[in-house]
Amino acid sequence: MASGRVGKDGMGRRGWASGRANSSNPIDNPDHASDRIIVCQDCGSPFTYSVGEQGFYGRLRLLTPTRCVSCRAARKLKYQRLKDGGS
Ligand SMILES: [Zn+2]
Image (cartoon, rainbow, N blue to C red):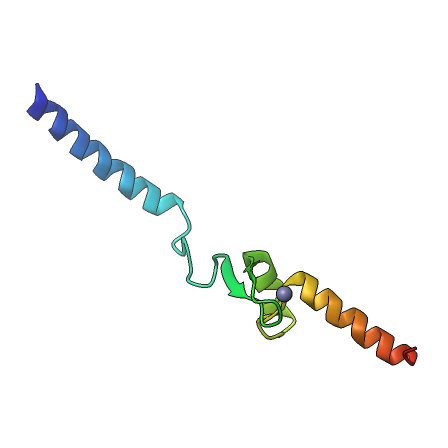
């Protein structure tokens, strides 16, 4: 009973594996296509650098961000104030 089950399962797996290799994308999971965790340079808290952002930054040829979203926004505000003349 048990040996029969094992043999059947082995054959089934082999058929399933070859079928899957044919139908699915050969490049299943490239190294860069996963979310990365980066520690913010300013506040030291970790933030997620997502696959979508990596693609966006790559297309614009931007460097990997070193600051979290809120610190980036804060810096932007600071520069805008300086440009306006400051008060
Ligand atoms: Zn930060």
